[in-house]
Length: 383
Image (cartoon, rainbow, N blue to C red; front, side, top):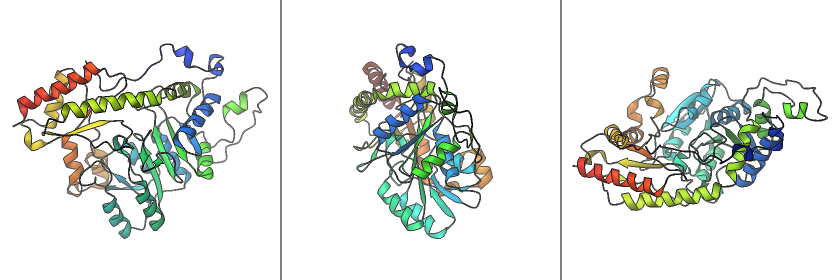
């Protein structure tokens, strides 16, 4: 069986743990500080706040800015639910936007059409899908024009660039995921918010741990003072030192692993380019190479996308679909009564996309087997 993803794991877990952890400090402390500093340097971002998920980072950014039930936000419909949940937590209303005509990213032309007619929209949450970045210069132009806050969902965006700008370097905010299948993980769960805005970072940091004035590390370490206060209602979103240790260890190999994923992408492109029944992803220079998402040309196949996935599974190949559009999910359909016909590009993509395995531990033999399996199935089921 070739799994869809297999994370990099240290040979000896004890080697990645700091002295403070080995002496018994497991929750947020010096190791989180170290991880934040490494990320800040790597992402060209002035401030990084490590939290326990990308969802938490998205939620905290909106909460810190004071958005609420009178506000609306724009998000792409082709995304994971977390992109939209974060606003829902605060009572905000999501306005969904279709994909661009020939790609996976949010349609910026359609976005501006909506902004012109609805002044209650305060936030845009673009998604850097699969590692391909949204045009930030255009978004920043719209932000100034319509007085918007741009909150980048960069769950797939670690290592991405938009033009010459590294994703994470923003005067607004970007939220990253360190979930188990991401380019970098903090041991299965984790996330971070990045910004160049000191006041935003400071408030997000405070809100991430109950709105407390002093975290446990500063209260309980040697010569620490126990005194603290709660100055506003906060949340429990902090990252642990245990998780940060895993992230610090992974940071050491991030460039090596990127080069390996690049090799794998080139093998996929070379091996599958002979098939006109499949559309391969466009990989621009700033792509993070997080996902390799192919599209089947539906009218050339005698079986559906789902049936093709079943055939691949029967051959022992794990694949995924990123994602079922938000407007097709039961909760959102029922609450907002979205008109499916407004999202033709996302509807078509959803029926055709398959994410193939892409991770450093994937062997050349496995990639060759996946390619050969797809070619064999095309011979059987392409009209």
